[in-house]
Length: 359
Image (cartoon, rainbow, N blue to C red; front, side):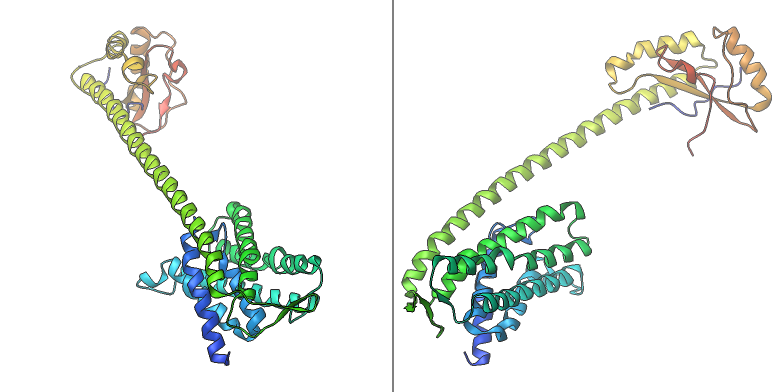
């Protein structure tokens, strides 16, 4: 038999109005980002959607640059654009695209309300109020959600499979922002617009009353955010712990399997010739299936020159494998032949196969 060498082992002036609108949005955008859920663009409630629409209703459509700039700056800050050496990035493009969507939504909302309800606002029935909320909220808020999610998908920030879920979160957050904060802004002091209910002027809320409404709402949002963040961090820590444990377990199993193969290599290298019985005894002594989970058996692939194949086949048949045959037909050598696989029956059909070496 040829020398045995293991080859493979298995295994309100215009400027003043603009500044006021921008400041109002900035003041509400930053707390909103604290309510953001991953990936940070869609929230349970989005107050600036109501603030932006309310500002355009009381101050006019000319305040749209404030909406655009405030939305762009805050979304750019949230995506970490200003912390990067290169500002020209996907985050910057996403922030600008989202800002365009938010601005278009506020402008469209004002246009629809002006056309179908009228400005300044005059309410005669509860139905008029419901129409205002329906047009400004669920209907108009389709715009920012569609534009924003479309931008994120096109930039590969959000996977297309996650787009419906993000769109729904975005739309519902904007809608709640309009329903809750647009009425508060319309009733806030500091503007000259007059709204009437059945021909009677609706008075503006005193600042103290407005704060009493906003503070409990803000506290509720803060507590919800704290609870959500706490759950997220605990889940993340648990997941990271599981991944570390799994990685160590996998490394230990691979190291154990590698040791089994190194032992087999040492056994072959230390023998002038290895018979089928000797290989079987060795593998049985290892207790492969009991001591090395995941390994069904250990095989020995032996290199044989083409000229020595007839003699090798005859020796294998005489050594206890009367049906041993080499297949497929061998070409130019050397030929790496699967000689033994133990425990017996693990993959008996593979014995005699000419294997392709791993280079």
